[in-house]
Amino acid sequence: MTTPLATELRRLRDQHGPLNWRTGNILDVNYAAKQLGELTLRHIPTQTLLRGRIQICFANAQRRLGRRYNHITVIELYRRNGYLLHRPQDRLIYIEHQPILVYPVEMMEVVNM
Image 1 (cartoon, rainbow, N blue to C red):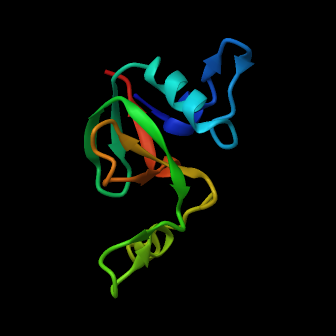
Image 2 (image 1 turned 180 degrees about the horizontal axis):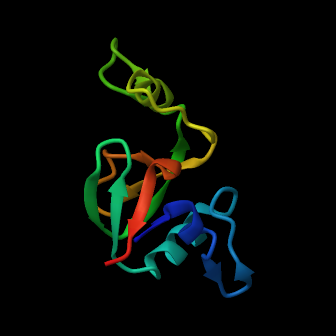
């Protein structure tokens, strides 16, 4: 059974109550995300399973990837592979200690094992 990652992120809380992962202070959001513990995530386009603590990135899907003269945005990368991002303005996530590999939240599912 799987749950969209966005659903899990909506349950983030701090000492003052619910925490908005889209617009909240990045330090507070990442601290609250650590409280979720290790998650098993599935990247929907590739069906790859990832395990670890998630962290929220400052960047959104307009982040440029690649070398100096060969840039591509995250939006364009998914579009080329046939996936349309409905919320490209949302922050990206990464697995703790792997900040180079970033993923849009809407392309991730939490696998309940």
